[in-house]
Image (cartoon, rainbow, N blue to C red; front, side):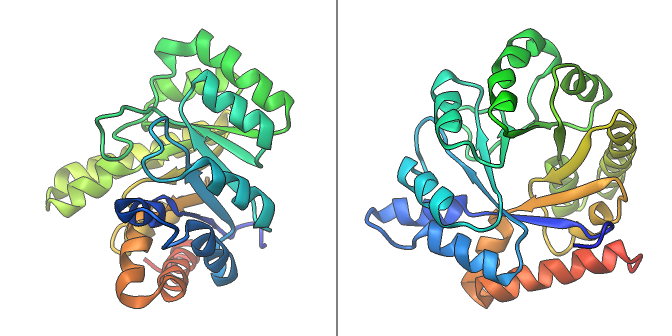
Length: 251
């Protein structure tokens, strides 16, 4: 991969959501992950939630066994999830906030308030060889805290930017985009690798993909939704085209 090429991580959680709505084995999120890999995804993201609402333990085992690209294991900062991550030792572990009542991850992790706890939580994961990422808002205080606790990567939450765009609130959208751009630069200056994700679509991906400090985008729900109409491979290929165009300055 070229130095300036932006990586695409594909989140396959909501293939499992559809499977679990009826029960049984189909559609298989592992099959979706392998198809995404063939379509050019640089990594696969899967969030094993406490309530197992989509991804199941067996999915993680199969992904670790069958994937050739890295697995980004999203999880809450709980003892149960830490034990699972230490057993499987995925390439990357992304620590995210988690509430049972939320439909999807609603915001970034409150690192500054839980700094000591999180520092102790991630230390064994780093010792096991996992790259630790922290999912946070584009907020300087949270970025500084993530750096202090020893995270190697931050993933900036792009949800507020994407929501404002969808609602036609372009003033808020542009303000959120400025914050994402400034905090990408700031995090990079601290030596953190910068990722971004949540809610990105064909319409919103290019401005974020154009940030030179961002090394990876993680996109899931939109791609799975597009796959219903166009197929997963064409959806991923189109997202990749838009990311590459943005990286080349074609906005």
